[in-house]
Length: 269
Image (cartoon, rainbow, N blue to C red; front, side, top):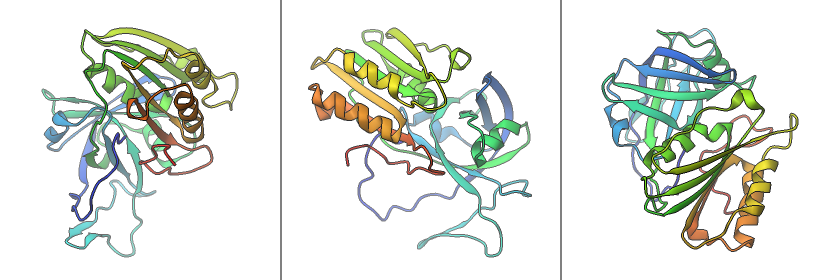
């Protein structure tokens, strides 16, 4: 997802690009990695860390999503045909040798993206828009404090990929249980703490408890992404404890009870 506000207006977005599933890996019982190809995806090689894409999913009964025509006035959709469901994701990795893009999906039950990913197979088609977003954090910061839930795992992985060996990173990940844990790697000096929710609710409680005890130093960059209300609670706590706004990036990746949360939720309202 996006790590910067959108500035200006009038920029015409390119048309979404049809892609094809080439491989599906089940990373955990609730995390699926879908590798996409069948098109020129080389633009993702230079995508910013934690950038976002728009995923266009076929409507029921469609083999591929219906695509709009891009005009100077914007996108024009065909009449009388169901439009695709659109969701926002952080691409996990671009493979320059294979020319494929990896997108990870959390299987959270009902929802067009979760249901599609749960049954995805080679040959299935979706469309991608993006990448979008710039990265505004200081990647040269010597210390990082990173927190997120399952929805943030691809972005956390991308961020850890970019950190140099001279940095240290303390990562806190909230998940439903031990089955959701995955390896997290980085050249940086890395410490990872997994925090398991005690039940079906309590989103962000473990991350907030970690934020209450986080060491606050002027040289630390803070990055938080999770459920929108939980993110705001964590953001308020970190700011109250003395973290400078310029050293704090917060993102609401989803909101409990909302079907399609906006992808530019920074929590600074």
